[in-house]
Length: 410
Image (cartoon, rainbow, N blue to C red; front, side):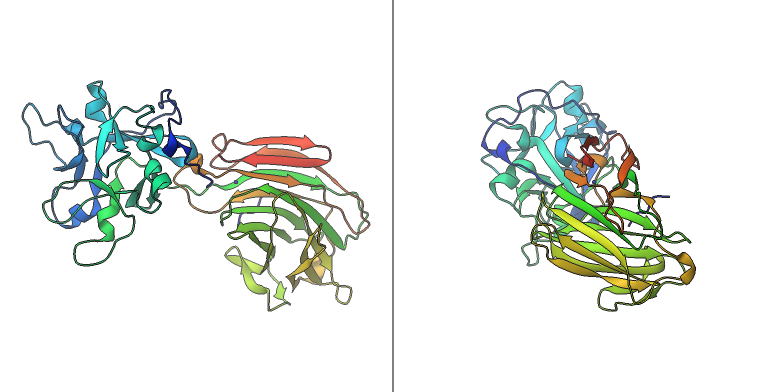
């Protein structure tokens, strides 16, 4: 996880014209080849290509064969990024000719063609929108077909000399002539995947008079994907050195994995059920526990000094409605670290890999002021957007009373 020194998809397009305006409002990639992994491995012609005077899309040689009707541009494609992490796949030859140039699935067929890049009543924009999943070799999933028949929406090739490209099942069906590689494509122009990492931060200060033996961090996940990827956290420091963090990491099924970690030498595991040695690849202790996560509900993350041993610190998370408390673990720190510091900072992180910053799923989080041992609430300041997706994550922040509200993603 990051320390400081962000996919919900709708398929209304399957039912009609999502948008009948131009789709080209975002910057396209450079042109490049799109190659079938299966055809590459079979040492056959492997490139997706178009033809003169036709809307057909098939597999062909990756190099032009010469003559008046076979051009390099027929094999060249670019990606035009859309909202929600999808792409239009545009052919250079057709675009240069002023003809329909976007790879399109037909609503009533498994065939693929090149057509207009705009949506209309007979061919919604979603028929031209593709989600590209994977690493070096990717699945090309059609948004329209996913809305009609999920898991049967991938562009694929076939065995032997067959040059057809059609929509088919995204998983190999087994047998001697149906392989995963038939659905995998290498996009030469595709941007490298990105891990957004830290996205937004804020600082806090609490007015409690030292020594501070407890801090509670109220946090409300207003909205987040029902999947792993986000981490919403607050850091804490010790007056004599050392730093840690605690926060929530949403998981599928309305769950969250709450984390409670400390970084530095001389730390020891106390709670062996919830904790283990090491933190973020370095020295420290990492603790965690699963709990229910209800969107829009406030949860109280608390770090408390053990009254029986001033070197031991315990973490917990409490539901503000049911008052159910979940223990997150306990660790021991060096005696020189002392009590807790009155100021530190929090952050929003997206730690999973995405195709681009435009693929960051929407999340909304409300941080409420932390309070110390005496219950006196602190305040926030220096709220910022930062990181490798800065300026490209749909960031929004506002102060709501004493709370700090953040929205990131699409």
